[in-house]
Image (cartoon, rainbow, N blue to C red):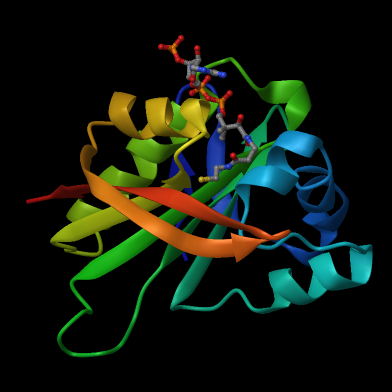
Length: 167
Ligand SMILES: CC(C)(COP(=O)(O)OP(=O)(O)OC[C@H]1O[C@@H](n2cnc3c(N)ncnc32)[C@H](O)[C@@H]1OP(=O)(O)O)[C@@H](O)C(=O)NCCC(=O)NCCS
C-alpha cells in the first residue's frame, strides 16, 4: 500500500500500533451515531485493523507523527464491480473542524482514480450527519440520492445518503 503525502499530513497504511487512536476515533457520541458499527473494546478495534488487506485499504492520517484519523477504501475483486470503491473515514475529535477529512478524502480520491484506475468512488452517510455530507460535497462528490430506511438501529429505521464521484 502506498504512502500518500500532502502538505499538512501523510496517509500511510494503518498499523496495529495505531489501535489506541483508532479506537478513540469511535468513542465519542457523534462517531457512535454515525458509524454502522463501532469497536467497543481495544481488542475489537485491533481485529478491525487486522482485517486491513489489499481489498480493504485502511490509511492512518498522520500529522506531525500523531494519529489524527483514518480513511478507508473498500475494493472488490468481483469483475463487474472492481472499477469501483467505497470510502469511509473518521477524524479524532481533537483534529475535527480543520478541513482534515476533506483534504484526506480529496487525496484518497485522487489516488483511487489515478493510481488504482478506478472509475467510481462512493461514500455513504446518515442523513443527519451534516458534517460528513459537507465533507463529501467539498471533495467534489455528487449526492446521488437517499437510501430510505437503510439501517435498523436501536429500534429506529435510519436513512442514508449516497454520494459518488466518477470519471
Ligand atoms: C464527519 C467528520 C469526518 C468530519 O471531519 P472534519 O475533519 O471535521 O471535516 P472538515 O473540517 O473537512 O469539514 C467539515 C464541514 O462540515 C461542517 N459541519 C460540521 N458540523 C456541521 C453541522 N452540524 N451541520 C452542518 N455542517 C457542519 C463544517 O462547518 C465543515 O464545512 P465548511 O468547511 O463548509 O465550514 C468528523 O466529524 C468525524 O469523524 N465524525 C465522526 C465519524 C463520522 O461521522 N464519520 C463519517 C461517517 S459517514
